[in-house]
Length: 286
Image 1 (cartoon, rainbow, N blue to C red):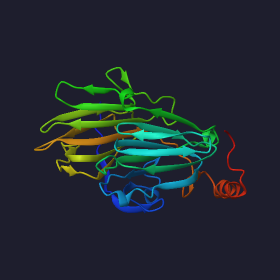
Image 2 (image 1 turned 90 degrees about the horizontal axis):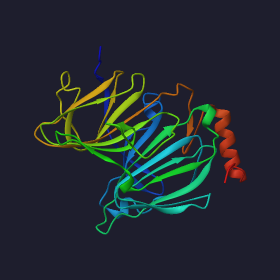
Image 3 (image 1 turned 90 degrees about the vertical axis):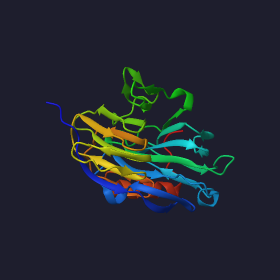
Image 4 (image 1 turned 180 degrees about the vertical axis):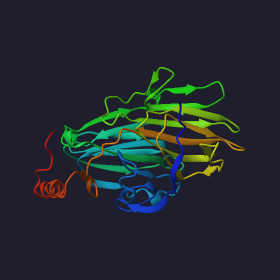
């Protein structure tokens, strides 16, 4: 018997200051551990005020996680200890697996109108893959397929599958799905999910009712919804359209030791990581 995922909890994203002085909204993070396992954090860094983002995120380390940057408008310039440099521009995704360790910087630049819109999601790595070699999957906007359903729903597939169409990101340990979904007004939508996987939605425009049979409340922009277990998510719009991110992943169910940009399983591993960083022995690959 099919089971619709009910809403377990919902959150409003909160203003946060990060990096060298970047104003962003945090949908969830350290305080919500381990509710979102295997995910750790979701930041919404949309702004039309360059003073709120230009200071960026100067050189800093990561180990034990993956960072997923999705840019809607503007540009984020990046560089790292492996010698990679480049830009993530409108519609692009960078899926960075930090693994054993990488030192990088991310500098939002905005567009010609001063707009900078994007999201960064952190995903944890299991103990067996914490020290895997770092790697990138840099995905340009034209590589991300858009599925258009008969009722006008549009789905950008970053990772996952809709109607036999797969997203370009592959070979990720937590078996995630990351979709950018737009619904016209007065439109229902149901999406199948894997039982046992953690699923959440983040409303980025308009408003929509999730699990509308039981919760007809239209949740507005910057609301994050965490779902209970089940095999599908149901959504419906009312008098206005909506756009939301829908993400899912296989829980890791391991201890989390987290300080700043490094996430390990034990405090001893965490202390070693910072000791290596200060001694200059942090980078193991590259």
